[in-house]
Image 1: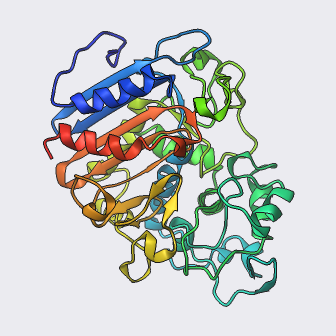
Image 2 (image 1 turned 180 degrees about the horizontal axis):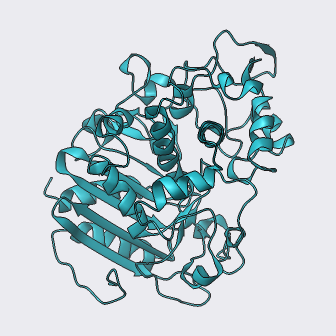
Amino acid sequence: MIGPKGGTMMLKGTFDTLDRLIEDHVISGKLAGAMACVVDGSGERHLTIQGVKDRETGRPLTRDTIFRIFSMTKPITGVAVMMLRDEGKFGLDDPIADYIPEFAELEIMDETGARRPATKPILVRHLLTHTAGLTLPLSYEGPLPELYKASGLQGMRSSGNMAEVIGKLASMPVGFEPGSRWQYSMAQEVLGRLVEITSGMSFDRFLQQRIFDPLDMDDTGFHVPADKVERFCSVYPAPDEGSNAPLDRWDESRFLSPPDFPSGGGGLVSTLDDYLAFARMMADGGRGLIAPETLVEMRTNHLPGGRDMTGMGVTEFSGHRWNGFGFGLTMSVIMDPEKAGSRGPAGEYGWSGAAGTFFFNAPELDATAILLTQYMPSRIYPIRGPFRNAVYEGLGR
C-alpha cells in the first residue's frame, strides 16, 4: 500500500471483508483498480489499494491517483451554496427566478408531452433536494429528457458556457410541480450559476478560493493539468457491457482541458486525500469554513413531511433501492438503517459518483469512508451497499 508521501505502509485491523470485496472485484476483472479508506477521530483506520490506473500500461494505482468523481461534486456545490446562504445572499425558500429571471415563466410537461402552467415556483431548497422538477437525460426517458437532448442539455456534457447552459435549461418545462416528487436532475448545475450570480465570482474560482485552497485540496478541479496527467486513470465499461476498451482514456480524456461549462453536478476530478479533507471538514464541524449548524442542516432529511425517498416516488435509482433513505441538501441521509439494509447507525450521509465512487460520514461514530474506482455504468455492480457494511464490520458494528 502507498502512504501519503509515496512510501509503503501496512495497516492492519478488522477490515478483512472490505479487503476481500475490493480484491475480488479487481482479480475478477470487474474493476481495473480500486481503493478504499476509513478514517475516524483517531486517524486513518484502514487503507486498501488494489489494481491499476489503466489496463493498457499497467501503471499501478497509487494513493495520489486522480479520479473523475462525477456526482460527488454535488456535496461540494452544496457547501458553496450554503456558505453564501449563511452570508445572507439568498434564502432557501427564495424562488430561483429572483436570481435567474428566465425561470419565472414555469410550465409543466407531463408524460404525454402536454404542457400547463406550474402553480408553484422553483425554490432554492428544491434545487438542493432534487425536487425542482428538472431532469437529467442520461437517467430518464420521455418527452422532457428528449427535449433536453435536442437543446444540448446533457448534464455536465451540456453545450455552451455556464450562462448559456442555464439559460437554455431555464427555458425548459419541468416534469412536475416543484416540491412534489424527487428526481435526479441538473439542479446542481443551476446552483453553480446561483453561486456565480450571488458571489460575483465564476463558479470554479469560488470553489478554488473558498473551499479548495483553505482545505489544501491541491488536486481537485474541473480538469487535470499537464503536470499531473501521469497520475490520472482511465474509466472502463463493465466487462459484460461488450468491450474492455476505455470509455475515457487517461491520456486522451476531455478532462485534460478546462471545460466551457464547469458543472456543479458532476464536473470535478479529485484524489483520495483531497476528498478526505472535504469529508472530514464536514465531519469536524466545518473547521471554520462553514458553520457547524449549517452542516447539521445539510445532513438532515428535507423531504416533505419527513418522508423517505420511497415516499417521494423513488424505489430504485442507479442500481440501488432507497427504502429508509431520506435526502438532505445535496446528499442522501439514512433514516432507518434496517430498511436501508445498513448495519450502521441512523444519520449516515453521503453521495456517490457515476463511475463507482462513493463516500459517507457516520456522525455517531465520527467515521468517514471513501471508495474510489472508475467503471460505468455504476449500477452494474452493487458494490456500494457491501462496501458500506464491510466498513461498519471493520468499525465493530
